[in-house]
Amino acid sequence: MWIPPLLIIPLIVYNLVAFGLVGAQGAGWVEPVMSIPMVSGAVWTISVGDLLILSALALLFMEVLKSTRTGAQSIIDHMASTMVFVAYLVEFLIVPAASTSLFFILLVMSLIDLVAGFSVSIRAAGRDVNFN
Image (cartoon, rainbow, N blue to C red; front, top):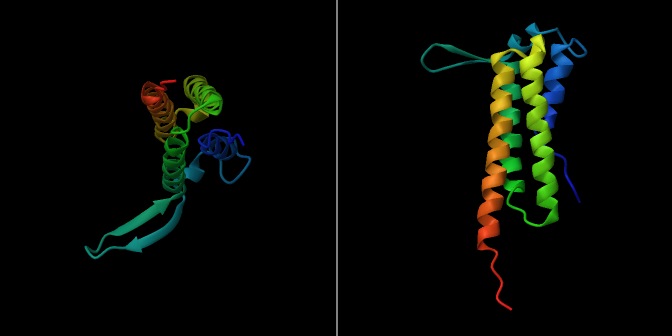
């Protein structure tokens, strides 16, 4: 069963918030979700943008694990990951609402997914030697 690239989820969530379809437009990323008092006396505040980055990191981890598969399925996965990266890149360069540090971090995560997927598949292909 084919699973689409998971890093498309943060792209969709970002666009829903950035274009005002869900929550406050643009400023919604800095809204505090929770505050945790630390032993040092400081208060650690977690924002909506922080949660998006954390969830994207978890999805990136799953994508790297997914990239260890071999076969025709992995080629489709790499092509789809490439398309997701291109979507991130084009949106970052063209859409004003995507010209933020948060979106750039998501773009870099997509690039890491793309490069990791290709390097893992190249190493796996190099080890797949059969003697008949």
